[in-house]
Image (tube, rainbow, N blue to C red; front, top):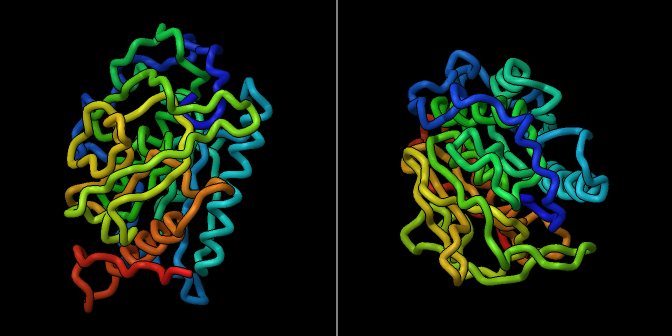
Length: 301
């Protein structure tokens, strides 16, 4: 699977949607801006707080109940960190919400987080639907999230992707994936996270957001970004060359392949990313700050 569980023997190619949904056949300009309001139409709530849309893959329907429970815990960590920063969180499952509902939620949001989960359906990027290591997929959720990513990028709504979220962003913008990697998922079914170092490009926006160019992280994934999508740049790598983070050339978008929301993670990466998204949302409606200005990092403990 793209996230935690080493149990990835239950591929469902029959659930794959057809090639006419492939994102590489649509440009970024084909995003659905009609589903996203202008920044000045999305004010903060009555107390001045920004709204964060947290998008999971699905609620239920998974082959592995333990994986379902772990994903719920990881999302709860994201929600708790966001609320601690004063963000108002709207959490939604793409498989249950669908395209139209996600579009409405995006229109009301100031920033978006795409969380981890299953493999991205290989038919969305021209992958091998019969790949023997393929895991369970949720094609309808993929289609809805792809539309959301394109709309967010077109509207310059700040977006953070975590693990599968990074892979989904890449596919949505026309990139593709390495369908299977060895050595990036631990064999321990109780904790499949692998601890390792990543190197961040010192000229990247992400390095400024995180305040570091080397990090010790925890990750668990058997897929990764291969060819970056339109406007995307890989800006961090594991020792074996695996893409570990991406950012967009123009839009306020940062993605990491690792899990800063995991209970065993070290440092303030999750908080830093959420602060970057929050500040970028503020910059969209603050005439006193240039849209491309770097976000202010959260203070470190």
